[in-house]
Image (cartoon, rainbow, N blue to C red; front, side, top):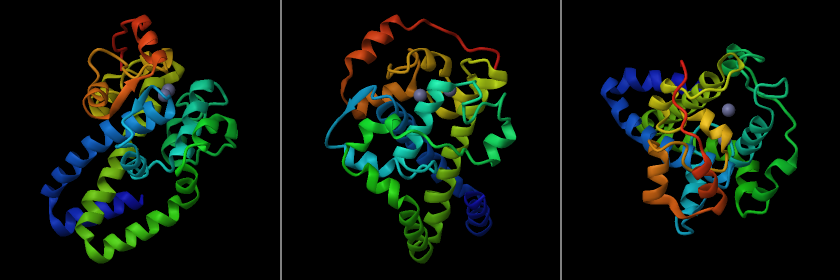
Length: 242
Ligand SMILES: [Zn+2]
Ligand SMILES: [Zn+2]
């Protein structure tokens, strides 16, 4: 709601054409930060990131509107263990779309879900200080660049958040796991969601996977052995009806 408000004010004050900046930033954040870093790197340890890039991408991973890395990964790993069951926190069939969009995904995720990440330096600090940091960032941008607050911060965050909703809802529609064309178009790689659930350790979800290409080009130090081994066994699955 906050992101929507800032975006609306920004468009009213500065003009609609500024959303092109936000769309460009969104593309980078979605492919390299949301999909590659948060989901495939932290969420599933699917590849090893270049050490020189790691601090930058830890920082960036806390700028896509979905909370701290620790919090998001805990919820996501829980989702993989319990998807489309009453324990799933965002099943469109069980919880409903309205709850996913406007409810709170409350759960006491066991610490063991993120045990490996708790040992990594920095992530716990971000988890404890996430909201304080963003309050400072918002007020700083408000003072020095309201334009950046609207089009570099709010709208790209909103688009990343929206992509997360698309991933949570469409590939799990009516409790049936599927690949989703609409999700793929909007998220540049995460639409191959059925493939992903079947091989969660694979860093590449499909041969046409823009995020995997981004990992190959920019982020990867090397691919974890599990990831390549499981990719070879990965079946080719086409998009379902969505
Ligand atoms: Zn899922
Ligand atoms: Zn996943």
